[in-house]
Amino acid sequence: MSKVIAALLDTSYQDTQLLISNDEKGDNFSEFRAVDFTLYAKTREKGELAAGFINDNNYGKATYEDVENNHRIKVVINMPTTQNILCSVSGLMTCLAALYDLQYDGWGCVLQTNE
Image (cartoon, rainbow, N blue to C red; front, top):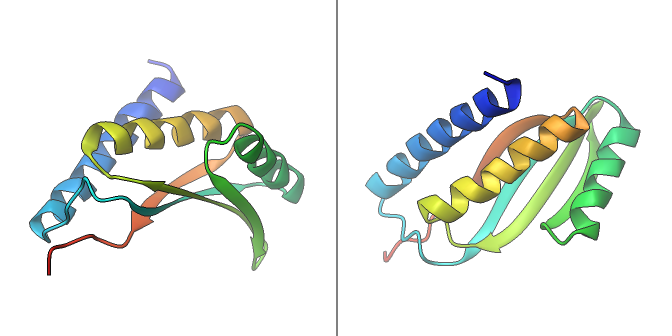
């Protein structure tokens, strides 16, 4: 099995586990919210290149930051977190990580509850 397929399967499993946890906390998945996806590059150049690619293709609003010598790319997308949408976007981030030799560190958001 290729490394990309293995990474996609692992990411999908991890995403689903987080969605199950969020469901138990009362998250309303269909509500739009800012979802942050985090990737790390080995160099500033790779980080800026990947952020530029993401922005140029309107995959999200990507920013590059050097945080204590960690080359972090933060991608923010206003979206619902229904399983099919979230797993698709997270899968895209996994593929971008493979293409640009990045580390995909997952996603996070503020839960949207009825409380």
